[in-house]
Structure formats: structure tokens, C-alpha cells
Image (cartoon, rainbow, N blue to C red; front, side, top):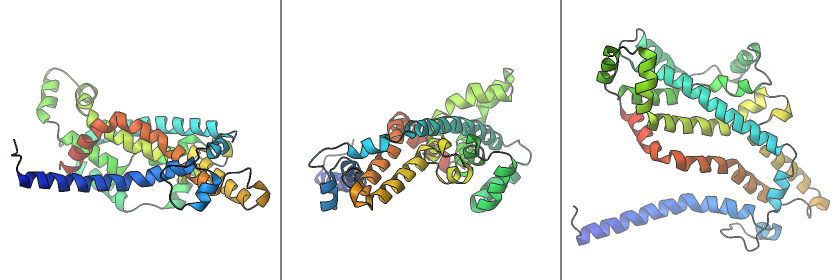
Length: 289
């Protein structure tokens, strides 16, 4: 045990103070966003920073959820996030496991190609042409398949698999297990921290999908929540220019804050359930060569 000396107490005090300042620096801006979304028109206009609204109002949220397609867009984002995360995890974990096995022929060349894609890509127009020629335009698969495997996430998961002792695989083969049985019955149960971490990475990316939706979805009825919320902000800003609509439509700044809250809250709800795996999965996957 550490001795409770004066030096240790001073060190702990300074350490906790610095951590508290960093935590507040991260928390206060988010509290400002949430508080501003619940503030009145007069308070938002008169104050540059709001930590706690003087008068509580749901006008901005009522305006956002008055949009008829808001719930459909939520369903689209939830569906794309769920299916996309599942597809990405299946493809990423299978490929990562193969690349983590030293006996795989061509392993170094494939790893080089994966890393190469992190540095260079075809660009927006070639990618669009590929998606178009595959017949994915105006389909939800256009939001999933082009980004199904992230090279960064693949490398983290590959490194995590490499940390699992080879003796477990050898023992399973002695007992008659093939590669798929080893993967699903031994490797995956031991890789929950890595799976939870990478799943969170993918889920956040799919939930925040905006650019691909703008490029590939021509039907506004198929827009995910991020695109629709952006459209709400644009429309509210345009209506705000009309003086006759000021009393009806909340200020654009308030709607922006409410939009940020609505877009961020689902991921904040999911994160606590995966947090216990997050640090271990990211750490082990990033440092094991």
C-alpha cells in the first residue's frame, strides 16, 4: 500500500484537480447544448452561454418532432445502424481472424493492402461509380456495403486475435474442431472486449451517416435521421428570416442545439452498456503487434 504521506496527498490533490478540470471542460459544453435546447427565445438571444435555463420550454423539440417523417428517419437510422454493425462485425471478425493466423499464405501482402487503403483511396467519384454500377443507388445497402470493413477496426481486431495463445487453437484441433468451430466456440467468446469496442465504433459511424446518404439516396423518404435533422435546421433558419414566423418557430440556434441533443442521445444511451469492455478492447488491440 502507498504511504499516506504529505507528498502523496499533495500529488493526489493536484491529480484529482487536473482530472476534474478536464472532465468539466468536456461536460460543460455539452450541458450548454442541452440547456440551450430547453431555453426560451429571449434567453437564447440575450445570453451567449446557458448552463441552466431560466425558463424551461420544449418548443424546439415540439418543432423537430412535428415533422411527419421524423420517426421514419429514426427507424431508418436504427435499422441501418443495427444491420450495418452486424454485417461489419461479421466481415471484420472473419477477415481479422484469418489475418491473425501466421500460417495463412499471403498474409503479409493482404495486410499491406489493408494498410494501403488507410492512406490512399479512389475518391468520391470512383466510389460513386462503383456503387452505381452495382445497382445500390437509392438503396439502404449503399450506406452499408461501401463502408462494411474499416481498415482501422480490422487492424485492432486482428491484433486482439493475435494476443490469444496459439495453444488454445492447437488443443481444439486435437479435439477435432475445424477452423469455423474454433472461431465461433473459442475465439469469439474470448474476444468480447474487442467485439464490444469495434461494434461501438461501427455503430457510431453508421448512426452518424450523412455524406453517403446525401450521395446515394435520391428519395427523401429514405433519409436517415442525420440528413433529416440537417434539413430541419435549414428550413428553420429560412423561416426565421421571415419576421411573421418568429413567434411560431423557435430560434434557429435553439433548434440546432435540440438537433445535436437528439442526434447524440442514442449513442450516449448505448455507451454505458459497452463501457466496461471499451478500454480493455481498445488497449489490447492497439498495442499487441
